[in-house]
Image (cartoon, rainbow, N blue to C red):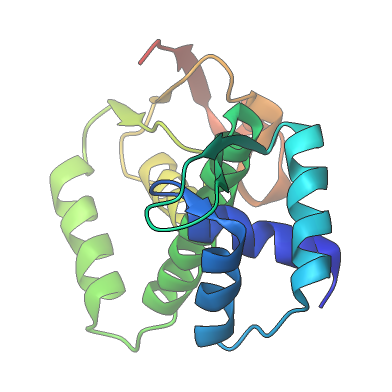
Length: 184
């Protein structure tokens, strides 16, 4: 197992509290990740040096003192990134799944509903707090193509750049979009 992968596994395993090295070794082994104890302790030391983990020595319950490990501030950031990446991947697959459903499925009915609600309106606002996905772009394209369309407003967080959200790789100005930044 590569050290980078091991570090990510350790961060996920220790996320909810403290563990000592041997306890972590047993947990990893029970999850099908057999690893040499010396390699684990070397990795734990490196992670402490990098700020991913914090450690302190605690008196053992029935024996010698043990070194307890818990996530450090960098470790919490890594954990947030791991969960963020996983969530983003799930959303991408789900949106791709929805966009590929056969006619009269969710996607078709949703687009029909959007058309009924927004057709004939000259101005429409679309609010988002996340970077736009394929499904968002399809919705914005549909809003722009509605009959009577003069303006489509995209309300977004200030850190979401217009260049990252142009539909279908075209220039946003040709699509009659206006960007309004909002703070969450």
